[in-house]
Length: 521
Ligand code: KIV
Ligand code: ZN
Image (cartoon, rainbow, N blue to C red; front, side, top):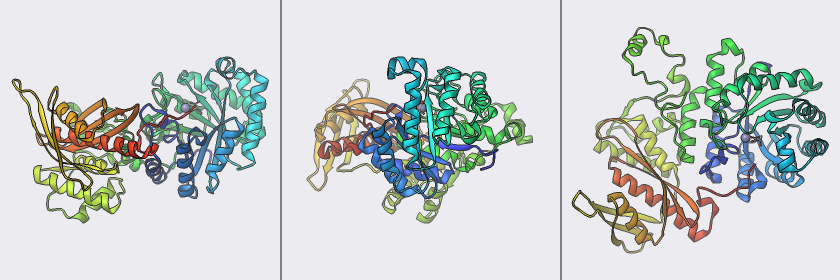
């Protein structure tokens, strides 16, 4: 690696998964890992194997499947048991890294670890040596580095490099740093750690003050050569540095930074959409790089300038980040082949069954709607990606509502091959009535925790997408539905979430839950 290449270390599957409500099952993690490999990230932090059997399995499967293409990293505290689990999960990966961490700041030493400086150094060195017996590529993180006394930080970094760490990561665990402060921390390490040239300095910035990307860029200016980041900036609390923002800042301002990454930037928007779809975490419209408005010019003066010369108001080309605008793509006479090609161009890979279902949905939509846009196709495919269990199927629904009527819903559902069941319920509105009727028939009592509706494209006949999160006996289930009829979209979303809860109830399977408690750092 040359000195002007920045290593992109993606931690969407580990720190990103620590975002409230963002837990993923193994299949979903594999799907994201595949997209990250295609995106060109250098290191995938696949998880924290000691946290739960599910985490272990996910890291192991990702290591088995992709460990010959991209470095797969497993996180471990500076504890024998954690490191043993990390070794077990990475056993079959040709390119593997163990990431060991131990807090170093006074607050953490005194209140969390109850260890003094000497004990911290001994534990850190011992765990790096233990991990080093398994593989050469070892990363050490002094957790809460940004609030650690600089001289002690230098000592920890120097000793862990001497013990075998090849990357030293300097986490701003609580998002406390500011750009100039973080620049000084990295510069200080460069000047005061005698063996610093033997390791790569890495950044890991949290976004509590909205500075994670700015701090990461400052660290690069000071000499860091690895950035830890996540797709869409997912992560603990306010999140981590957003991968897409760091990468595009470095690319757009290559004149200033003089560095590059190996990221295939035209994959950024598709990966962002995939992660948003799987985690249920929507991307705000005006989010830099991947938001729906990121390339929309509204003001007349901007539009005029753009028509004369694009670069008057545009510093990046939409196609460079894989941005899909209001493209009119396919019509009702487009064949399955054209649909399949378009789905692939949009960055999705569906198995034959899911592709057929999405195509059927597309034909049904094209019948109702004059113009079908890329954004419609993304929503339809997204809906089929969920791979949710479908024990209960909705056969039909009818609602009645109005200012003088009691909102009522009548539903027909079928459970596997059993006879169709019919029931009705009243509610606060027609959607609430549908939800109650669904619960009556399936005999699952759920609490609605989140209800989100958005218009996928433009116009009166736009496709609506509804996302719901329900809580059943303390477990959370996400459901999505799309339709030009918002009540139908809501009904499908609730049905999907109830089907997941039903599968969970029947099998007790953690994989069916959208939120699995994990003992994460
Ligand atoms: O924020 C943090 O300190 C972490 C460490 C585990 C690197 O996520
Ligand atoms: Zn973190």
